[in-house]
Length: 484
Image (cartoon, rainbow, N blue to C red; front, top):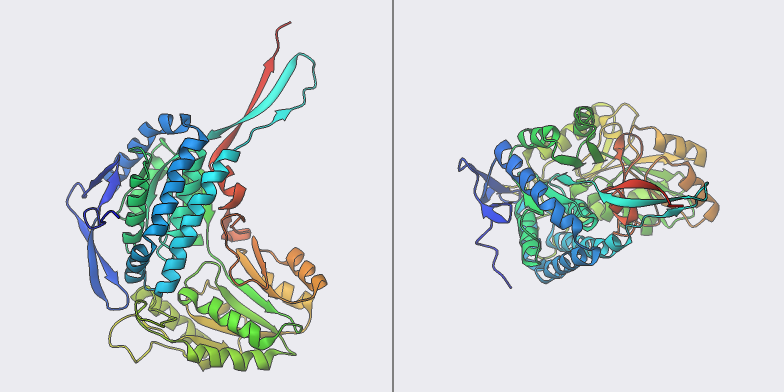
């Protein structure tokens, strides 16, 4: 197995591991210890421009390669990621904070994404269209969009980039990745897998630097044909406005506020276990994290008692320690946001059933107690803002029409969860809920072969599945006249 220490902390531009042109570096902080984990090269707009130029120069050759050639690189990358999953997961836990088991699951899921698109790239089909005149023929061809800028946040540093890199490369596009500055190390290790898998120089590039500087280059450089962004709705709207100058293609996977609806035919103790695991995974710092728990009044008290007991029993600590179920929050700002949400809820009359603040058991690190709250009112920020925090709000309902209206009463529409054993209820919820992902009795709906994305202000387009490949392809219509 190749060592990763030689390239750790560097950028990859045109096949070369390199430092920032001006020698700038940035410390990566371990959120469990608040100590510097590593120094990484920290570039800027100059490096972004060089990466776009390299990707543009590499595009013609990569686009001409067969889908089988491109698939070979992606499959080999998946194999290397699996072989190195323990090492990459350890790095991910240290830089992001999530427990080691969650980190390894992220790496393996991302490897599956590379493998899926290795095969899906072979199915970028055009079509033959019936002609209306005997002397004409019509058909369509698929054409790679071009150079793609892939911008992702810190909560899933590998998964969210893999959902962009893999389909873009499979479609014949070239890529410039910009990960969050705070969590670049695990993605660097994935890029090492890409290089070792035989990826030609310039086809995929990794740049580090301030989001504003790099985004400005991506938005204004005409050689960058598309931006694929995962992050906040606020930033997504800014990119949408700015992209209009060049009609630049965009894929946007933005914020969410997922309802979790539990009907009376569901077992409250069983669903409570699923709900607590789903809510507190990665400290609630998940775009599809369930964030409003609507429980039918017939089972509300049983669900409430079970959820509080389970939340209190979760083991909080450094994600590298055995048995830890909840790691630290990502940084001080995330911690302050969680505190602010609870303070606001208390001011409006909410009752904190467990947790509610920073853990006093740790001298260092951003540890927040898993929190369950009840007696909520609509004006609380917990029910209006995207709550990227380990906070579980409980609400009751009586009728299905009532809960559908309440669940849809948000500008977001990314995911929704429904727990019922009644098929009629399932169909009515699936048809009535305004969300791009609807999980029925399923706490983990994301998988490479199913589309992922939102309605309303939760984004534009879809990632994963065949739709995820189509996002990086243009359709060309060809009409030809036959000779007499």
